[in-house]
Image 1 (cartoon, rainbow, N blue to C red):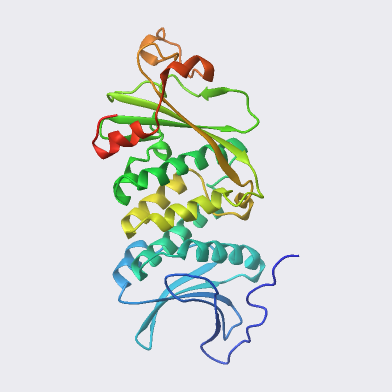
Image 2 (cartoon, rainbow, N blue to C red; image 1 turned 90 degrees about the vertical axis):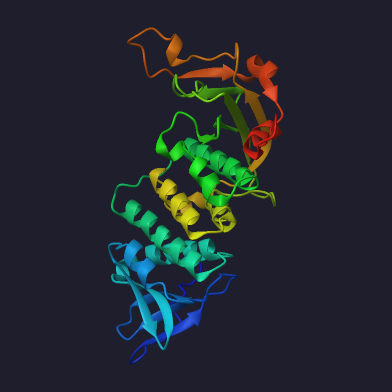
Length: 324
């Protein structure tokens, strides 16, 4: 059965608003609320003065009022639903926002997360966003698995900066003199990986690695995560507002919005393979293709690149500044 609406049992006040606390482990107190007009509200209580940051990054989402109010010495971000017909959508936005706010750390980071979250919804609701295909969900999930691993070796802002996939770079990650191309395979797929262009396995950097994640859809496994869940996990690992904002900008570029449909499937990483792309590694590259030929896509059989297999640690050795 669907959950009851959080606003159903909140009375309408004569003035101001009535609220009830949102359960959970958010870094700042959050509330469901109703105002004197009967409108549904979502309220975040913030410590400190965030007026300048709000003015700089405020976003207007069609049908949702966004306001930073100072009441009794307390600043509050107040989201107001303007059209009752959009109540289900507003509830979905607020519920995914509360998940994003868990363990945010500070009020400043919480506000940055909330504003970035609203920007993603604005992109989707304005019609510029699109639903990701099953293949795109797997691909984005795999890139985020690598980003989480990278966050164990690099400062948050630097790790997010190195994620180049959303910016249509030839490789998904670039740091120092190293490039990483990330691929995903479903658990049922045969042992081939799809290379979508003649540029993916050619780099100007000294080192280029192909990292492949085999993802199995195992919803009952305690280790399984959905796309929405792994995005929350990355957000919780980011420790400053600028990194959060940069990460959310890249999610928008990926056409991601926190929709309930991305709660499924739930993946387990069942295998990780890393290959050093060098020498006679089987690939088609632009520098070897006749003039006038382009937009090449091809499959590589994994058994054919087994001689180039290497330890996954060599990638992070390059990050840490050690030899692979």
